[in-house]
Image 1 (cartoon, rainbow, N blue to C red):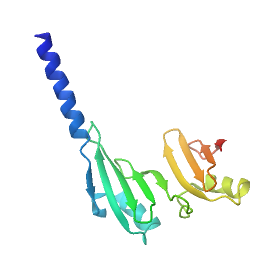
Image 2 (image 1 turned 90 degrees about the horizontal axis):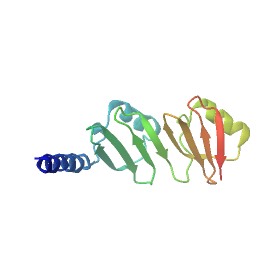
Image 3 (image 1 turned 180 degrees about the horizontal axis):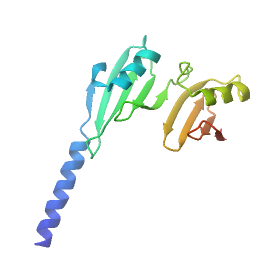
Image 4 (image 1 turned 135 degrees about the horizontal axis):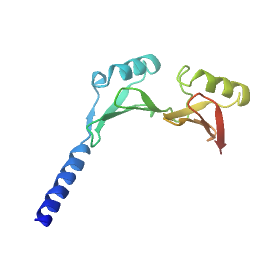
Length: 147
């Protein structure tokens, strides 16, 4: 009986994992949450979308990965809030980098341009064109740099 229950449980876990891994590819911007749509329109209005990947996790929460023809990429969480913005070697559009971090960059690294930024519950990580990685807390206070 224990073996049967264990086998059934393993099968259910496997099915849930397989279903969670089913990604969807689209080019339809309206499939993004409204917040994400507004972000794309505001900061990347002239960029052509290559595709949007919609992923579901085990809890059926979605994440969105928008890739543009020019190589730029944005990742959004389930609510449409950006988590990563990567413009490869071109500067991030003005306004994406929080004001306190932008002020730090202007004062301390005026010749550097931010090309990618990511955020999570612990803070921000910003990468420059010369491959410096700067870490900031959630309030935008500088914490460390890796080169």
